[in-house]
Length: 295
Image (cartoon, rainbow, N blue to C red; front, side, top):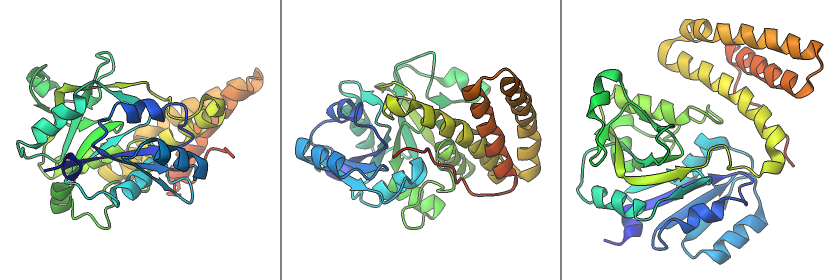
């Protein structure tokens, strides 16, 4: 069976011109790659598709964020499995081959992830009682994995979650925790999530967007982290839990906003204002509407 029938790669980009080439070049040329560009850059699409025969670039009409962007890419996948990647990531040599080797064994799983090469920042969460099961050579079961590198078993996810229109990710999340939400839904169904130590990735972290947009992106991240955390907790544990767990951070942000306002630290003041706004809008059950002001 051709590799393109087994595994496809989906990458969501937004002003990612500086880093995406390194990511694509770390993927074998016989693997189909679908890039969803949230900045709707026609020149970016043209250059990518001219440079790489295995790349199809889809332009979104607006900035969809990570969850909806991944869903759009997954609608164009015809393979059995899809590897979700962030553009600020490089696969180690043979990392893809190790994944495909495991997939050919027809193991039962919903989500499988390569492992981060940075041991100080693991890309998975595992309960304390199961932490002794971590194996440096063989796959081990975890509770969740980070969204920057995860293999989805599309057929099984469709079967257990009754996915509609290939919307695997909850599109209410613009950024942050859409992967945790998917993992949570999988675990609730008693299904397996694995990490594959023989397959390694190097994730640079928060480098996906061109550094010249750093200011606006940082404002967006602070708004969405707070909003997404509240929404995630409300969805899985209830509104009251989301309120109580988020309130201390909200009050701290309010105090820091006042402090930075008084001492004239304009950017710091804006950061905490974003956190306040994210929490307040989630509290009022408003949608995740904030977008970075990038032209």
